[in-house]
Image (cartoon, rainbow, N blue to C red; front, side):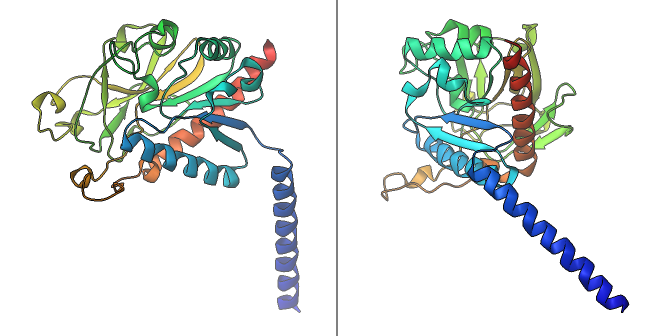
Length: 289
């Protein structure tokens, strides 16, 4: 008799679980998400960035089904209008930035009205006399604060990140990353009162890079990796460049990816937690307008 009662309880729990999952699945199919993300990308510049965009799209699309948020990605930057962006809780730049003046204005308007944004790696790149000119002062100097690209490490290597300030995005004091190409910037973010540096390269990571050029190997210094601007609902992460089989570039049609960014559980957990917090803050700020 006792065994029969236990089986009935187990069956009841099973049926409730199935019912809950079916309701949840139907809600997600109907667009009843916790929050919605629109990610922009080009996937044209650098094999490693293309590899990262493919990985990121697969990762966020897959995790969205588990976590219950909506994820859409596009390389159609004409969708960057204020009305379109306003439909989403988070806007992502996976590998670059908009070049059209109207698109730039729409994005700035969205952010200034309380929208949320997260950008990765090449999304902050700007350099005079390059294909990505330093010609968007609000974005690079005011919004990101970093200014123009200064230098990088090479070849892509993993690093340990240290938490600079306690923050609501992660309780981890140190984050181990997968291989990445690390950027340095012309502006010293420590001198910008509007910028909160969340994580920077830990000294244990030095030397960072393998060369062969000496200036591409960092042996000392302060290098911010993840930060936010207190005046906007945003986070920038310099991570987003997978290691590739560069040595065999001309020996086959495609170049093999040697590392995956989101393989780092600590970093992945940070990003997912950040998404929830950014979306929550967007709804609070945007509704206020």
